[in-house]
Each structure stands twice: as structure tokens, then as C-alpha cells.
Image 1 (spheres, rainbow, N blue to C red):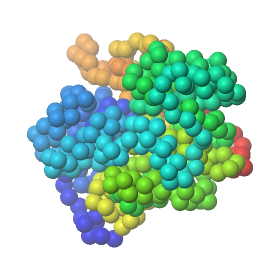
Image 2: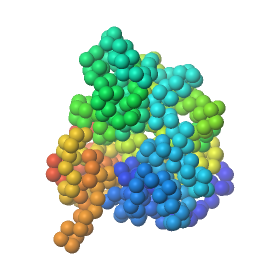
Image 3: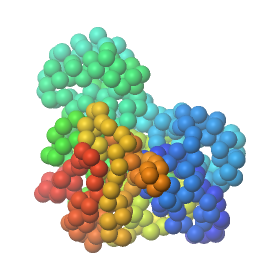
Length: 437
């Protein structure tokens, strides 16, 4: 192993974002002996307990760079996709600031579904058949003639809600209208991708890349729908677990060789090398794994179950990606299972109330993790109190020797936390028989 990776540096770190994903990243980084001071922008009530929250707009990239300089930040970690898509890595690089994540050009793998699909087509990466439409009437004409289920996707960033699974023509035309006419996803719906509907098991696969090399893959399953049994509207994700019961070494090797490695090679050949965490949303079908989407950052809520199992110092992993040394670092993971369940505000993903007091956070077992998302601190009668401040409020995470044990830990503890109109799915990691794939 390279001595540069083994060496311990004392660093000031900045984590950009305010969700449970960013709380999980900050929590994992806080355990590193290499971290001196930890800052979060803007953070939440949970991150305030492990570092210093700094108020700033994620849309003000120059302001974020000034904060990094002012606080002598040695390494910045970007959680959400929007700053990456807007070019924060490019700006920090121009200023000589060390930052983890892909450039704006490489982040197109998430920020433009059309870009990702055309890249996959050019490099024979398995994915559903698709058509890209820039004109509403052309898309309407196509869907009017299409029979059976289809997936309509807004091309741009839509906070994880822009993929609409439609069982028939009427649903597809309604989804198209929402994207391109009603502009439910803003400019993200100016272009749409109409995609073949696939059957199988969904899984999220993750690997660190330094632009040339890939780390071994790790996988998780997440739950997008708002209600048990995968009913209700799409959300940003209401729970996840790892490892998937059907994630075999053979499947992992197939995904690595046929999907992840070709995409990293393709971006390198385009002179936009991908450095960061590459996230492939996959459907494991009877014909093999196929790509539903790529993301350019840690998943949410997947990060909340993957990072608790990471044994290797996360600082070393991030720096290896930045320095082109992923192949020289052995990344180790804890054995066993990890399950995360999201507590959400009543009404989410629609309208919901903010500012509700949260109780019971101190009543969970010491080995159960609670990652904050939509929370804030307020002074109430002279005491600091945690209030709700978003749709996804908390992710409660349990670990165990088995997934069943981890699941039991979560659901035993989540009942101890309360806020008005809170809800959560009851079927996270309730495993069904694995299908042959």
C-alpha cells in the first residue's frame, strides 16, 4: 500500500448538504483520526452535535469556496447532486481547493438522462430500450401508439422523483404532460426519455472511481414509494438495506465488468474522467443486470446503511479517489446487515407541516443510529429543541449479524421517537424469496 495513503494528516473537512446522507457522511468522517475540525453547510440538528454548521446557500458556489478558504478546509465532500451538476468541483479545482466528486462534465451521467443513455448505447452498456424526445408533440405521438407499460423520465435533476412508471397509455400521456407541459419538474422536463419497462429486482451498486480504477462494488436496496407494498407516489426514498439477498459475487462481477468499468472508460476517453462515487441504479432481470440510471454521488437513503459498515477510514478512501490511487487502497467492510427506515412528515411527498417538536431521540439504544435530514434546532423556553424542517425527517439505522436482526433493532427503536403526524413504512427489508436472475 502506498505510504501517502497510510500517512495520517490532521485536516479540516467540509461536508456540503443538509440531509441524512450528509449526516451519515459527517458521522463517518468524524471517527477518523485524521479529522481535526468538521464543518457542514448548511447541516441540520444532527450534524450540529458532531461539528459546526455554517449557514450558506448551496446555489452560491463562489460563497462556498470563500467559506472553504476562510475555514482553512483541506477537503470538501459534496453530498447532493445539484452543486456537482453546477460545477462546484471545477470551481474548487481552479482555486486549488481539494474536493471529492466529479466535474460538471462527468456529472452529466446524472444531470442528463439523455447523455447517460447515449453514452450507454455507444459503449454497449446494458440498459432498457429508449427514445429521447425534445418536443412534446413527437413524444405524444409515440406514446399514443405504444402498448403496455413504459417509464417516462424527466431528463434533468428532479430530486429522485422524475421517473414515472406508467402501466398504460393514459398514464404515460399524463406523465408526459406533467413533465413537458405542466412542468412539474421545472426545466428538468424540457427533454424526456421514454424507456422500456423492465421486470426484476432493483438494486443500487456503488464504487469509488479515480478516473481510471474502480474499487470493489457494494450494493443496497432502497424503497422509493411512500406506502407499504410499494404503493403510493414516488419519494426521495423511505428506507434501504444492505446487503441485498440476491447480490452474489457473480452478479457483482457482471455489474463491474459490463456496466461500471465501461462507463468509467467511456468518460475517460471523452477527456472527462470520473472521480468520485459512481452509483448505478440497476434492474436485475432474467437477462442480466440493466442500468435504470446513474447518479454522481452517494445515494440517500443508501448512504445511511452503507457507511456504518465501512471499516476503512473514509478520509483515505476519498483521498485515494482524488489522487488516482483507488487501486492501491484495500477497502474493507463489516460483515452482517444494516437496515435504515425513514421517518417522514405527514403528507410527504405532498404538502406537510414544519416546526413540529421531536421527542424520544435520547431513548434509542446506544448502538442504533439516528441520522437527521429535515430537522433544525430552536430555543424553546430556554431549552434547545429539535424540530421538524422537511419531508424526510430522520433515518433510523440498525446493524446486526443478519438482516433480520438489524431490521428488528430498527423497528424496536423507531417506535420510541415521536412527532405529530409522523409516518414510516413497515416493510423495509421484509425480504421475499429471491428470484432466479
